[in-house]
Length: 117
Length: 107
Image (tube, rainbow over all chains, first blue to last red; front, side, top):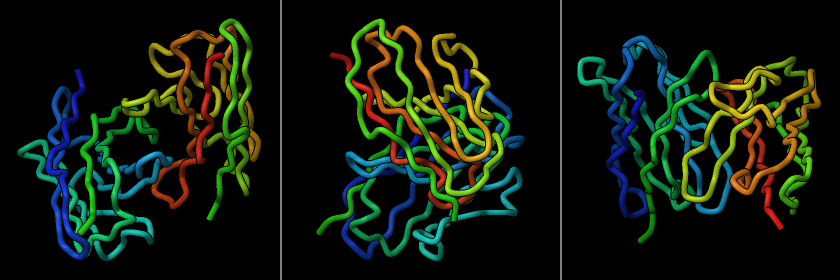
């Protein structure tokens, strides 16, 4: 059974950093692209970042480019999201996801990040 | 950027009714869209991919259709457990990949 478990969320002050982790199990982690998607409270879904199988290619929307960094450790079956220079608008539940083909077929339960002073 | 616009924003339906919700792309996206269901307090679940293909285990009352810029998710004989938000999504790795969602409430 595919499982994705995110950790690392919490309350952080504006301008500070936070690193999220997502531990995967139930599939060959190194064979799949991985993703982070977020959802602000009461709002819709926003794709945040993608990483290819060996970590050599990463993608971000402009809203987080230069502040967020996605990485992965295939030996540890873990994908990370390093978030720097956090803003109030980054407050959201952050989901880790794995695709089937090009679609987000598996999602974690999410971890809440609150950016507030 | 291609923008995905969903309508209506919300709808209130009775159990057993048929419901149709729409997703319109600002440019041709061919059949490269998916539909997700998100119930309160839960993660989204993939329902439909490539516009009309039902994902594993999705009940056959859910049907996706459309091509190009106009897409539809139809739920035949809505059940109480279908109360949720529904999001369309075009192929990933792009900004605004998701629509804003349609909230389906049961009367």
